[in-house]
Length: 524
Image (cartoon, rainbow, N blue to C red):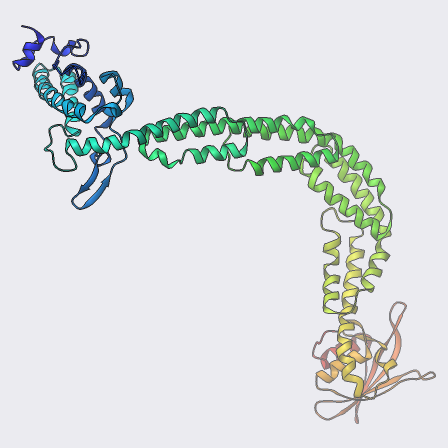
């Protein structure tokens, strides 16, 4: 009995499974010449292969229409209708089939499905599970396209085929676009714009008609091409390192070039970044080693005085941002040479610094400038050997400026008092050093002691008297003399305090303590 008769009678001989994929006439069906449909063996192979690709896809992805009041618009062309499976089996493409071809195919496929079902059971009974699986897969796919489903509903043959015919050109267009993109990507020259373009290409909305796996693989292919472009860009940038001159200017240019490359290629994946960074380090060190001698020679170009000091400090800052970032073994040589030059010029600039602070106006803004003067001048280490001289000048100018600021308000207050303008500026030893008579009187007034009068020693006298009315209503007379309280500096100092019934002599420290007590610790 022939294999064909065995299938027709519902029986399968022992060699059936072995020869099904090699004998084209097995499970044949005599279709009309017009449709040119293959035999059932070819159809079963086609359907089994398609089922293997589509069996895990939710059926709604293949359908189009309305089900349970909900619109369904599947985007996937069934694998069996794709050219790679359809054309080898049917000798044409799916879009070339007429409605008549589709109707005839349904009859053939339905018959082949029934026979494949019987052959599957026969193979199973023979424990040939692999063949049984293939037959059952073919039956499953033929069922998926609605061949055995009633002609109504979204899952019917006519509804599925109608929707699949719409998807065919969209799927084909997406495939063509994918292939075109790959060809375009391979021809791209390395640039940031092209790398960005590859990312945009992968997100083309036409790819919704491709399976997730196909889209993912395409995205990976474009990403890999982007990495190739990025590698070439990084390699091209690295090749330019050798073009920079071995000077301070060349080092700055190299450093700026690296920053530009990293900024331009920020976020770009490349396998060459490590090589790029290693090459940069080697190039910068090589340039820095030779540029250090140039930096040391440049220290001879600065003059004495504050202007020269400022220029030297600016030069050090410039070198720090370039050569100092590399720190080769030669950097210590520059540091030593710089420290020597700094100490020399800083020693000549002290008087200029003092003069600059003296010219600042007595105001809140001026005081802020004085306080910030040291930090603004000496921003970086090392500081000059005579830094304490500069700090002392700034502290003293801040003290005198605070006094000057207080004088403005204080002397307004004293305009109605019987105190000569010359007397109010007389130097006086206060609790914490030099102040003026006018400032002391203001502090006493603010502490509750009312100024009554001041009798100056005049040209020929040796002592002056300051009269005050205490908060308790007692008149106090403070006898003052000019003494050298500080070396080479004469100031008024209280030597005796009198009231109506007593008098108390004061030493220098006793005078300072007494005034501190009267003014309640007010600052001078």
